[in-house]
Length: 142
Image 1 (spheres, rainbow, N blue to C red):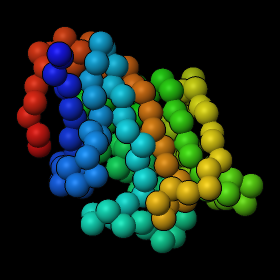
Image 2 (image 1 turned 180 degrees about the vertical axis):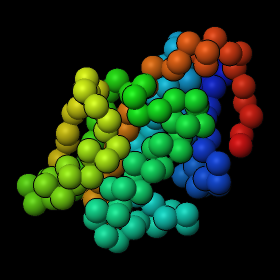
Image 3 (image 1 turned 135 degrees about the vertical axis):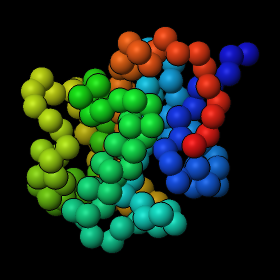
């Protein structure tokens, strides 16, 4: 059995332990990031939609940073949106602040009925920089 090379962003390990999943796993030159929501430090949802989306991106960027990646390393994005027909416009205007310049990553958007009190979730796959993917597996938890 191989050992999972888990990436923990600073200050959020208890939240992931409580919910029993890894924030991200490094594997074969890629970083697979679990869905990130606009959660406050205690795990509760940010009530304002635009602020919630920004916080989800901030939480995602904390994980990318912990793995020595940036959003420019992201190659695939999946977003989950509760009631996209009424919320997509508000959500989409936040993307440009984080997305970067073309070429853009691939994107799949999925409308859902429930996200445990959240309105938006984003998960990504990123290519690890060459300097990172050749490192030995580490189990250090920041």
